[in-house]
Length: 335
Image (cartoon, rainbow, N blue to C red; front, side):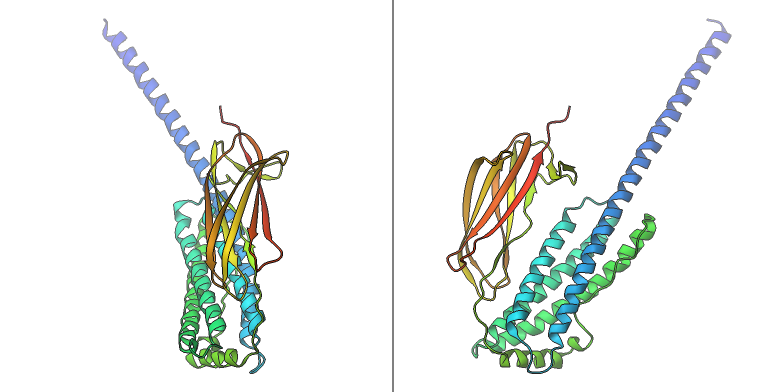
């Protein structure tokens, strides 16, 4: 082999290596751009949902403050307890929706702050609800006053956590250059409501308020499927990736002002023609006023197509059954 031949072969190998390096770099850039685009869309969807949720919660927070600032002797326990139970349910549903979103690692800290703030508000409202129900009972009054104080402390923690969340959300919006208005701030407690004297005065008003009539109220929350919906739609219905089995999670809330016992949760699966495929039931032994739980039904057989889930809550004390329908589509296998 002549020296010129070796030199030409060596040059061709170098050219091929250089071309491969350029192609690899272009592929890497394409992959990175795709990831950045997906991350940007995910953060944008997250912030849009957060804005909507925060706006709704700001109105609830304003209504809560209005209850707390009622003139002395005008506080009514019945509408207050009903409002608190509904607010806890709304917080729980909103938190579940936010937790289901797929986010890039940079957004997980912000979401965690929001989830923690909502959990604190839920816990605080639950303690306040317990106190409102227990205060008229002479034996339970000392414990109820402690619950009321602890509830207001949890509400304050939730307010402070949400302030930190708004700071993180603003940073995300700037980092990913997401258009739109900033996330609105909100808080459940006024400055006056953060004092011990105010809380004890509120307890005195609750004790003096007229007695409440029993009002049972059961609510079915937003159903959750496993595997989860992908976020897309088919014919207006949420989509589940191809699977042969699904698990159904049913949130149940007692939004009334008294404990409820022996709640039967009945779940039915129907096909696209509304034909009944399977029915199962499970009992919830007891739900305190304002308490929520999730009943899990595992391993329902499905195949490609559209389905409907009917949920009915049966309770002797509740003449009108609580019910909910959830529809979804199982995709065909890819490939």
